[in-house]
Length: 343
Ligand SMILES: O=C(O)CCC(=O)C(=O)O
Ligand SMILES: [Fe+2]
Image 1 (cartoon, rainbow, N blue to C red):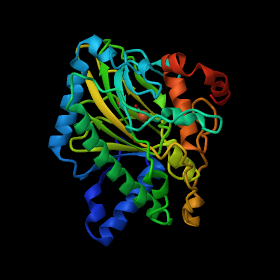
Image 2: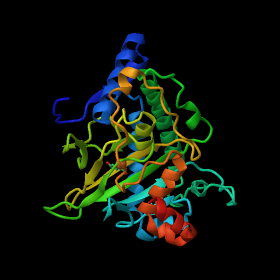
Image 3: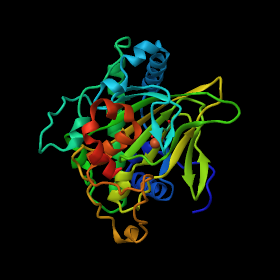
Image 4: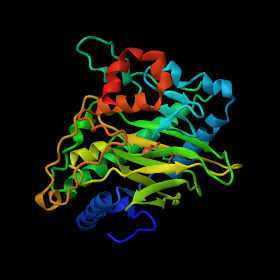
């Protein structure tokens, strides 16, 4: 593939514009996710009003007084939900210059036991800021809509690779484990930017990212170079996570990316949504047709050099341990020895 100045753009509405358009969309989706692993998705049908409400409630959250944000700090959540203060997260061995709130699926906690895998510790309630009671309903509509688009994209990818359309459905049907992060990158320096979030691959299946209008900072690796991926109006950035790379034996690519901090005097809000399967799901190995299998590259090395684990929950827990040592210290020191073998 020739060099690339910007990510490909694909119009999601083509998937429901007749058989021919749908096939063309699926093939272009597959090729972009094979070559680049990232694209902009337009035509997704999310009402602008909902997007505006999400960005507005996000900004209001970050504008809350520090003590109200710290009242929902992740250190109070064994499930790693809630607020991460500035400098409280580590990626690629470096400190990320961002604050965020993590919101997952609202479920009961699961009692520990000898036969209960450790990753079930990630199931449980969210921490919602009391000052913003309307946040819950907006976020829940957002995650429902994004889950539905994500599943359609997965089905399209399955078909495009010659596999049954429902290949991935079971892993998500009953107990999917999506996660929304609401993130703010403050502008801290000038002229030399700092690490907003360090270079990484996403650990799940598929990520849909909304960035505030007119904000840059996201960079995506392509052929050994960083490509800028500024916000494009009306689109989400969509990318492949490591579990989908694993499921396709590397045919679809989980691509390295990072965010460079904005300059002092500005900031940047983004909403990465990670569409993840049930914690106990193993990704089905896709029966990729021979034509594509021949071009599969195998699976990229995890940045920490450890193999991607087959069960999603094992990966999820490992990522959480790496990124949020304060939560581990408060709730999970009993697992430290076991986890450090997997790290
Ligand atoms: O904020 C962004 O633009 C991307 C964030 C990201 O890559 C992540 O949180 O995994
Ligand atoms: Fe990411």
